[in-house]
Amino acid sequence: MEYVIILAVAVIFLVFKDRPVMTMKFKDGELTHSKGDIPHGFLVGCKEIAHKQPFSGQIKVYKNRFTTKITFSKTVPSKVKQRIHNVFPHTGTNKKQGRRA
Image 1 (cartoon, helix red, strand yellow):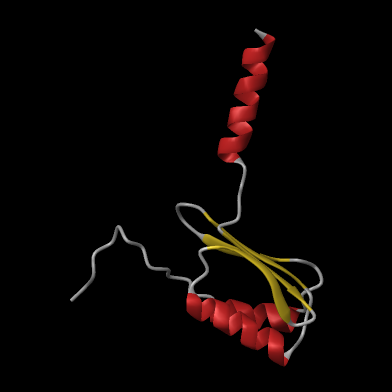
Image 2: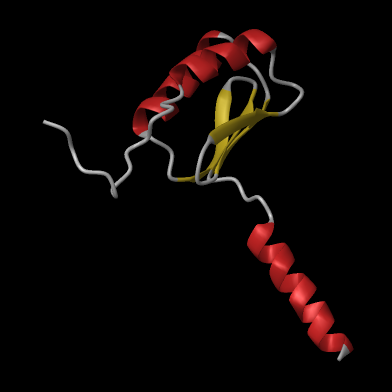
């Protein structure tokens, strides 16, 4: 009985835990690590921003059914955060939706 409860808690934790859709790590203005399906325009824009204003930190993108949220590490300056928000494609391509004429 104890094993069933522990297994149930583990499954619930794995299902409902927020996992980032995209992750990018920068060090001194260079992209050192990226993970996930990052749109090409967003990746190029972030690299340009990091080249012009070098920073170190991590950017994570979380997505649920309704919203997309970007989180930054504390070491990313606020001006850089705003520029990255401006480059971020808020409306990603959703393959379930049809195209409009």
